[in-house]
Amino acid sequence: MKMYPRPREGALLQALVDLLLATALTTAALVKYTKVVASFPSSLSSCQLAYYGPSSFTNTRCGALCNQTPSCRLFCTTADGCYLFSSKVTDGWLGDGNDSYTFDKCYSSFPLSGELGGNANTSSSTVFANNFPMNPISVNYFCTTPDLGCFESMIDSPPWWMVDFGTPTKISTVTISYAYLIDSNVQFLLGNDTIMNNNPAFVTVYTTTPKGGLLLTPSDPKVGRYFFVTEPAMSDIGICDVWFH
Image (cartoon, rainbow, N blue to C red; front, side, top):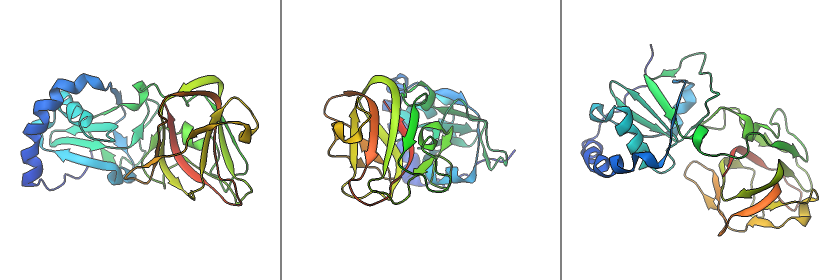
């Protein structure tokens, strides 16, 4: 069975384990995890956040460390230690046929996170190649752009991507794991009108993430049936793996 390559254990990193565990174990229940298939493609390496040695390989300790690590969504264990990742994995993930990286056990926070977009419908102004509008909300695994999970429009005036929740839905946060072809004039709208420009802004300010994504968090939750990403000009847009909470 092929294991994930063990990073070189730095003295500083190992010294931090006991300190982190002292606080992490008291908050292990803050995030709920579901066991997922523990085989992944090679792209997983680019989503690794941290590694902790054999003293932290138990599921409880590794999960507690994941809770304390920003953007950690997946933790995996082997006899060699605990591995933390930012990748999305659903309980529908069937594993990587090549078994590029295999662990003893893996647990994901995504299936129990209350994500709202999984059963929604999508549409778009245009589609470039095979980057269909349903891709960002329908994949069971996402780490980097070579993975499936991205929508890209053709150059259009204006380009847009839309999610239809079916009924007005309260949204507190939208996470876009990776965004490309996004200009400074990008707009994020949420409302109940099928005519895009009749809907109010979901946010006017957003936060970028270390992995090239966007975090959209309004000051208060907003309610709407239709969520749009658009740019009010001749342009194109590309977004990957979108979560709604």
